[in-house]
Length: 537
Image 1 (cartoon, helix red, strand yellow):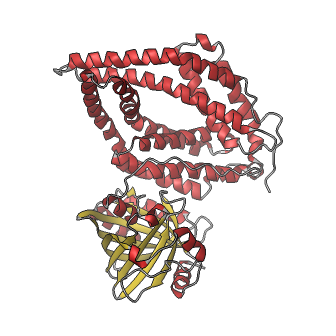
Image 2: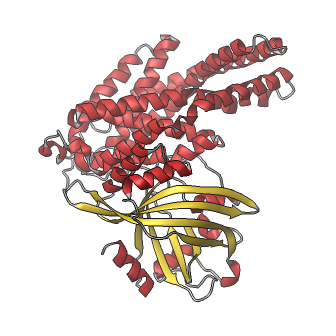
């Protein structure tokens, strides 16, 4: 059933949902117009339509909290009610969402909100009186059907929509200026191909926040929060080929999920999780380098490193302000020099976050479109031996994990006498081992990965504090250098001394505990040794 058939089925009242697969590009109106003209022949496309939508929810926003949005759209003389499920890809570059639509006679919500009883059970009990407008959109839309060559030498059909208008909530407004690419027929990789064509004509950016998400933000019900990646579903016996798709898609989705949190500057976790996604990606590129195209892997590693470095200063200042300095101030609330230090640190953080604006630059859009297209087309298959890709993931694990485990033990030899530089190298080795260990944790039938991974995580967390202390000293040096002409320089110096002293004492107190955790880890038997390898189904 293609997209058009699915729409007709939903209107006719069938219980099966329509799967909406779309990618949205935002930009200035002139840039969007150039993108439109790059894909649609002169005079092509349908007439401009005015679409007015009202989104409904309960007073406690129960629908939103359960992962649904409910809207009524006025399209000319037609009224259509649509329930959408955000699903697991709600913040991916390509959104995949189920939706249930039904025509209405009057502009008020109709119950039940979906014909599928299971969906209604998930939504929970609803009464008409509970539902009230949460926000609205008023958009002028022009659409065109665009054919795109597909990787299998066929064609894909995409509905391209040029939207301009606004979102309204609580006397607040936000501009809508975007090109929406919705897949009608064919593989999702076609969305990336068309998006690259549009982006080549004018600088655009991937927009991960839907109109509904932006509406809820405008209504003051939520913000752009950092999001951790869900657990990888690398089931026991999965093949190398399938595992690569899941791992790299999870990395791309985690970047997309945290993009708006980085740009909004409201949640430090956004920068942290964005960088975690990139580090996990770089680790995967190293772990699987024997089966990946060399040029592709090199390009992805360079781009990941570039973005990690761009966001590094923002992350350093986030950690210094929200963790290190916050702890010292909590212990010494009357110390005015710490307050002045915090004020100066916020100014430095604001400057550091200016680098994060790189996520609005064309280079970042290039990266996400190319990376996403590579994942959708399984670009790693180009140079790999099919027999290797069909092997169980665990077949690559034992030797690699042994190598990384031994490297960690080597770096930790004589732990009590290690210098700070030695401990830093050990911390990096632990991080690489943890990522690799998590990739393979479910692949050994007789293994017991939980004790090993749990001990490794605890040790890595302890070493994270050591890194935070080093980051604090680096931040303090930058802060004092930047404020040498300030009339508060003396006070800032005193406050910096307080923080350094605090770190020194805390580290001295923690060293024995970290040593104990290190020896516990070193004594833990690696879960992959002696375990059986499960073959793919």
